Image (cartoon, rainbow, N blue to C red; front, side):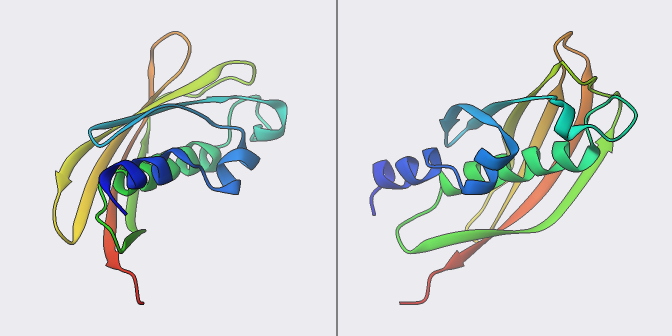
Length: 137
């Protein structure tokens, strides 16, 4: 698989991303962006988006960003993720996510995902480590 094929694989989202309702808006080796509407079925019972949905959005972006940087025969898995929450995302608003690299190494990649809401306020900051795996033949 060449770089173009790997980028095409990164563009192709897993069924979970579709289930959650995220829309990937940009995929490149340097940056991945997405949107996730804060729908009633993502409510945490207090009228705001559930923290798990926010974390899942960031996890998917970290995996997508790593996939956009993989070489032929490689895959990836998350080995660590940390989320800091700063503000809520009200149901009816949208979560906007931007994932950028902190480290792109041979065996691990570390990504930071900033999640904001419609008014631009920072809602969460996620730092995630992805392990680069060599696929067994």
